[in-house]
Image (cartoon, rainbow, N blue to C red; front, side):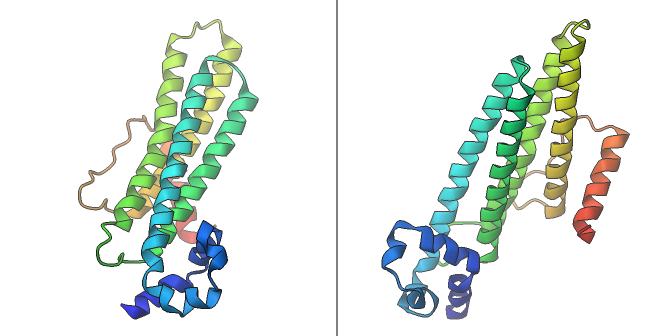
Length: 210
């Protein structure tokens, strides 16, 4: 167990988080790497990661609500800003969950399943664009055909949302079988042949790194 804890404490990203914490200014880096703190830093660090994940998830929910609320308008620049914010927060969540997984099994007494948390976060990241797609489709279905410009704007947003969904769906599929307690995800978004082709292309890029 000591070897595992040493690995955890020496994790570069983990050290980055520790040094940002309020009490870190009074801690010498030697004690973080080799000193007695190595026996209890891991639970504190995991708790910090979990809090960051939860905060980022709440931020994502707020951004998604803003995007849906502003669908009734036609401010494409605002939606572009919100979409960029959404991508940034998704990146933060992915980073935090990956760090959590890299710690391996949590110390005794800490009821945390890193793989389940990572899968849930991937699933939520996939559900967000799916929900946005359905809202766009609902507006398009009720929009008069004479609203040509607005329909064009919404179709453009729909295309971007589908690309976002395909990207997150590919990452969810790359995870493999869901952990115990989760059902396999079945998209409610209708995927056309062209969408399947895009999805397969994304998955090939993920596998090859190109």
